[in-house]
Length: 424
Image (cartoon, rainbow, N blue to C red; front, side, top):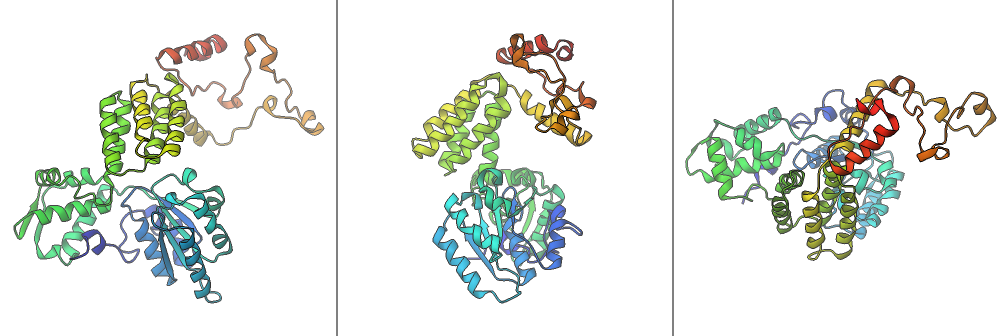
């Protein structure tokens, strides 16, 4: 049995590597380190099928250094220590540190991550971690602080088209068939920027054709995938499409669809923490101030799932999903922080008004720090109008209340406090 197409086409050098030019293109940060022959520990964060594992392997080959790999799904603390010990014994003086690649590092427990700290800090190994999850939540702070973080992007359409052409012209098996890519929109849509998924789809479609000459059309792809709904998704990447449908169903106030997509994830063996974490994000982003209790329930759901596990964990997950889907919606806080970030990027580091600064020393007091600040609790209603924004931004509005019963009350309070500023 031959290797899957995605494995046969795995790039062996940076020249063959497709995408991520912001990291490995000429003059890019990671390319410079590789060309210099020395890299520091780093974590690659990005969606499935964008080349995280491939990039780690290319780097190890380019630097001609021992390459050890562990999967967070199957490895324990003992495996980590064994690899570190082998790396330590096999290293010669002045040689580059061996590379330890850990796939799905977000699945490593705290104790497993702790066991890496000493070796990474002393340079016994150079750690390359790969994760589809936000490392800020999944990687312990001491380890994260010892690693650079590089974000990989979903592949662009041009990258995927290049990959398809390479597959039908370079692969030893596919080039024996006369393959014409008449239409590619369906393959683009189903792959979602995932190179491995795209190649799995291509291989499935070609294998389903009984002729030497294969003309690939969108209709042919759709028909093939409907007959084999999971065949192109051997590693479970479809869950990223399904979680998108799940969140959009909650946002669209459809509890039936939310339960359906959740059931698909549960049946597919999805990590319950993955689902619970998305519920917390949805509660903040989509329900927001229209129902602040949503975030409390989502947090409680995460805790409950962690305590009771499967199969009972499906019950609080379902309760939370239905509650979020049926709740009133507001994204005012989400829009507000995005607008605030954009304002900061545009205006830079504006000075803090003097009256808002603390004055712990006499010099600071003499310079006017804290002078004129009015303590709101000394006034009726625990409020008095004063300037809190930087001088040049004092007229800016970032939060705009939306129309839901709870948020209307918050907005009315702001109008009562600030008058014309909030009547705009």
